[in-house]
Image 1: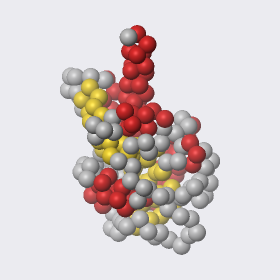
Image 2: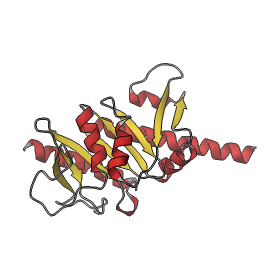
Image 3: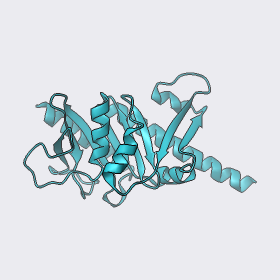
Image 4: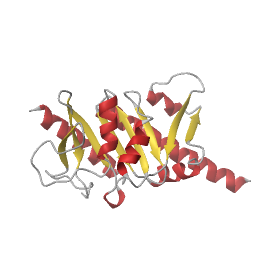
Length: 207
């Protein structure tokens, strides 16, 4: 099996798992996985597809600028330029962008602060942080309608091979060295978001 075929199936498996969680409402969200380094190419979800279904037209190959790298009628996802920032600036191998209710609410709650901080949660170990009372910070950026402007702002926070950025009232983009790592990080962030919102809700009822 070719590298392209392997990466295709790998990304399709991730898409299936996230779809089972209902993390792609209204065809939202997009996924990408690196295929080659030189020249840089990666697979990205095709625009407007129902990600709960698995088809032969779920992804297309694009180049380092996010342009089609093969002959196809498919259109790259609107947020392809976010993935371009990741693969051009790091050695990440997979990046995932989803719009969930929890990550949208968190981004609105902490949008004015420009970041959300989680501390003392056991699941923070999923990010490779093992210190007692460890904390992790997630930047929250403005949701620019112009995608190149959004990508430029997003790119300011792309510095390492793993990371995450929340876009206010839009969604989260998470990346890691491979598909397994990116999915693990995404699951951990969504756990933190859900836990935090539940705690806030319980506190409001008690007080």
